[in-house]
Image (cartoon, one colour):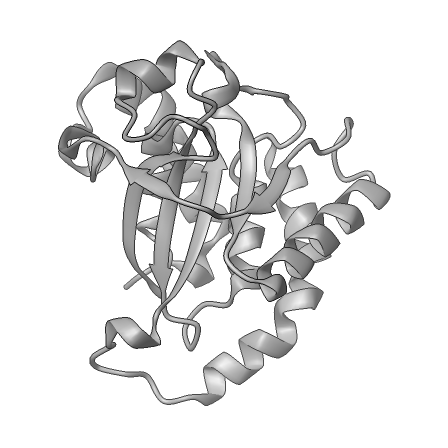
Length: 213
């Protein structure tokens, strides 16, 4: 996706987050955050290694866990999910501080850092496990996600319609340990250097104001 489209989406989405952003900025920064003060967001946007690497760098996101969600098989393995028969998508679940980053801002990052118009595919990663999906945790998240999707489609930001699945979150099965913090620990691997690194660099260039210090 070209920088021009990144910027266009950012301008289009930003107005919806301005009020939340101003409220966020008016609050004092907290030195310590209790888990009870954090909220959850769950996204599928292709390979969870890529999604994890992006959201780990967003200020206000305290934790990112990779896993499997949206399917019918209990306790699936990575091999089973890759087979495409479990119905699960590769997802990342974020624990975030809403006083630092709003759900609207997370949606903005989500829609700008993958192609939401390709059904069951992100680049060379093909299969239902790589589908674009928002698994909402409450009605507020549902309304925000549906509204953003509708606005983006109506504005024809993308050449093709957005096919992102917006569905209630039910359960996530945490992926195997070696999938967690994957890019940070395996940056020299070919997939990381060829696929993930360029995405991270593009994200950091477009979202300078949302990066952790």
